[in-house]
Image 1 (cartoon, chains in turn purple, cyan):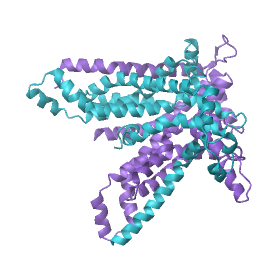
Image 2: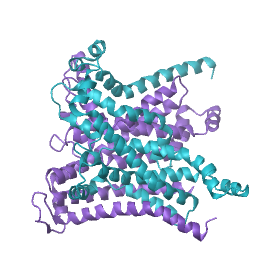
Image 3: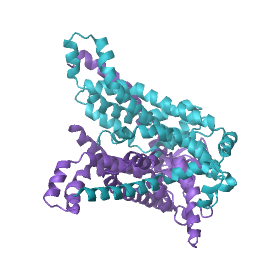
Length: 290
Length: 276
């Protein structure tokens, strides 16, 4: 069917998308790499000079970088653990026949559609505020001292907020996967006397492995660049207690006007994300073969 | 299993599912409730909040204080504009990759996806400087372009997985029956492609509506969509729970409704077809 003529037409149809994405990838990234080798401060325009790897050296040796790196990993890891474990449990529950399943699904999926600035501010004020928040009211009702979540456990609080936004995503994907599980095989195992636990370990878990991998990898891509939630709740503080890598780069380049240092940080973030991306691409690439 | 124990089991599952579903949904529900309270009532203990009077005053105040409608309109223009632009570029590309696949089609698709892996913060500085130098900061046109580019790979991928499912044989059959190219496209391909295009449109509007990195970095007021509008509440002035709730409710309501319609497509779109 594919003649020479139609192949040329096909190339013409693909090219706008390819050219645009190519430019989008190469131009700003090239500029970031270039800036990362310059001493370049927005407050001193026209004073740019070549510094080699100095920016990388200063970025990596500052204390804030290591804090931010650890915070980034804790944030990604914490949210992943909560959403995968919670997602599997929820998916198993929602897969059981029950009344009003449709409505429950609608309630569970809802947080995913809430924009990050809204979810962060709602949790910060209406729930975690130590004076008027819901948790403070509950603590007072039991005669306890209200806990100031965002000052005393800023990173944990942000993990909770972000996990709330992503739990629906994990649940929905795992539920979709569960529903494609072979019912007859399950029933056969049950007839043969396999316990619930054994059926879970030997049938359900292997069936879900692929979907869990997909959830982990896709969420990692988004979680590595969490930004809005931190900006509107803690501004990365107190100190660097809740600063992650994207926030550190933002602070360095647009709050401290250090374009060179910020660019070096940006490149480090790109490298980190690419390590995760390589795994994701392999997964999806495999899927494309079938 | 006897019928009775099945019924008991279903009752237990139902109660558990509703309880957990309610807890997950609760922050949203509570926000909606607070939005219909006065500022004084909104900070009371939960039970006192429920028994206090209901009012619409926060909605009026939000509109007066910060011109909600302008930001709502910006969100509409940005999400719809970037989605339509992305579709315009992606439909021909996905179409030709699905129907005239070459040796490198797979590599091309993977490469497109890889552009999505680049963290936004890696290109923050040059984007900011370019926007500043071209006078695009706080303009809708600049942001439409950025949102189009960041979502283009997802749009191409989603469309590709949908188009791939349209059987090529059906075209040959139609041709045998004497259909010409025009009627092929009009009566066979378009009706089969429309559902896929519609789901892609829906999912992409949701993603663009909630995008909160570039919209926060590149806008301040004129082109600011609802994400930025809500962020202005991060520095509170006096009592503001009811106003924040009203603003939040208005920011998420349209997309919550769209989102509920697109649950199924969401899984497929966000996993690039890996989970269907």
